[in-house]
Image (cartoon, rainbow, N blue to C red; front, side, top):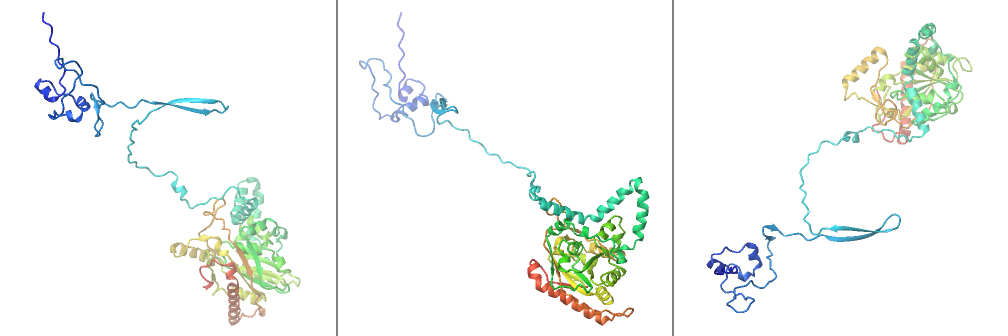
Length: 475
């Protein structure tokens, strides 16, 4: 039996493979071959074999270190090159008890990290953004007790009419009080106490309560005098401007918070207000106890002609807010427009009663509130004037700060109030029943206006630094 023919080794060169009709080497085998043996180069030296004699069968070439190309990663048998094996990392550290611990973990070498793809995101609106841009600033919780009491006192005065009226309606809802409320209501409607001039309901104790000091220190408010006033004369204080609620007039002339009796000893002053306020149940008793009276002509003449050491009004004084409700519509911060050109009734009253005129200018009264302007809302302004003609008063559309915030509410701003009392203007009393001379009225009125302008010129740089316009006498 013939021995099988030994298989010949695969020729290393592509030319020989072609002669023997063998398939070409794979790319991996070609990569392990030196560059001069690739693609069947004819000028390369013959391969040396290991063995005895040339007649022996061809053997594989000796093992040599494979040489790799620099371009790109190579694949072996269709697979990617295997990554490096992980390394052991030993770490020593101390625990909380001070014992030494050893941590061993695997550290993978140059492992390719997955690349994060950034995707475009479209976000909605941020929740609470409008609250961050809110114009309302709330008061902090850590406010001194004194400031809280100041706010409470001013709130009571601002809402006093509404509070007393609410108490009355609450009492009316209880049938047990009806036998008392019916005659009381009739008495309120028919009473002449607000205009009698006797001041019998006036309570010095109520006017001197410490709560009014809290009221005045809220702004804060101060009372200043330009000269002494003789207690043997009688006076008419003309308060300017009206503002929205005339807080300065109440603090200076309806209470003893600013020391009126110390600055003007021997003078009993009465702040005048609308007669309709004395027809409000419960509130009229509070107003009379605070020393307020009606601003009617009868009331003014009775106060200045009754009482006092001589029984003819000596040492008495009344305070009239001359501009009235019409002037309240022009009350805007950092301005001072006085409705005074055609207001001469208080001058005639002074001539008839022989009372001296004392101009009073309150710096900062118009800064306590903001209100709707006539330029931006002309229809609203016309309606306010119509209400004033029909009812004698009007309601300004105003706003300021609140109890717990600094931007919205009916509480006045904390702005300084400086009430300056000017020099008295001597007035010669006319005879009883004699007609008042219009020329003399104009003369006294001109002196009164000039004294107001003097107060403004002298103290505006101290008390009205942020003014936008100068003093103007309108209407």
